[in-house]
Image (cartoon, rainbow, N blue to C red; front, side, top):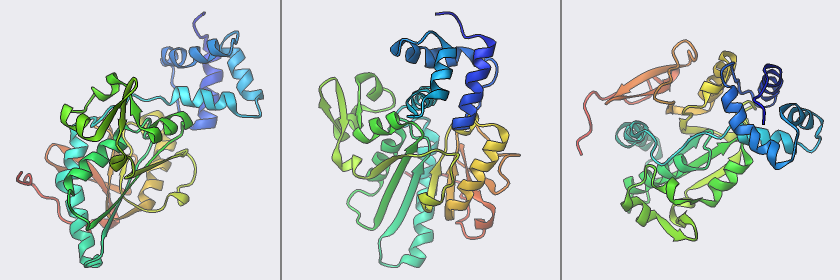
Length: 294
């Protein structure tokens, strides 16, 4: 198949921006080719212009969904970048429990976490495994993990929780694999004790967030990099509105909210950074400067 032309790239990148809020700048032609060519071949289309015309004319939304699913496929693996998990384990979650224990007394303490753009679920299940091991034998914590993604195919895969050998070898120790997964035909499936800790749903980050409820922790890692500046600003404004007092936002290791989200201030701990709302500064526990002893 011929390479995508400049006109075709402009047509499709504008279409993708309009329907998904994802910005593909010049220089991303290779990505568009790699992601969309399989759709063209599968439906015996003549090329990228034909795909664009089919998507615009298709009232069923089938081609729009296929394009969004293909473009939003993000590389993900279990326990990707240890820093966020270290921050959650040693700082964020303990501080939340301290804060909430003052108002909940002997009642179970709710901890609600949102993984935005969760892809096929590896981040969500990594969180569930980590939290399971933090609170083994404890019934004092009420954990609730929500994973959302714009791709219906990704959400379905995450809900089912089956991964091939290559996928489980990326980030999982043999201990975690054998303890929390069951060997099945052509792969491994997450055990019900972990899968029951999470729920998944399709959600477009460009839509209002009212239906999501409030959260104590939001992970929005390597997501905003695909948004234009105005989209980034709106995204983090909406996230700020759904964080509980003392709540935390985690973004990608190479991302910064400086100049983008004035509602947040950075908190530095160990070798990592997380963000909290400015108006929760006085409510949140002070940031420790020494690691918690193991």
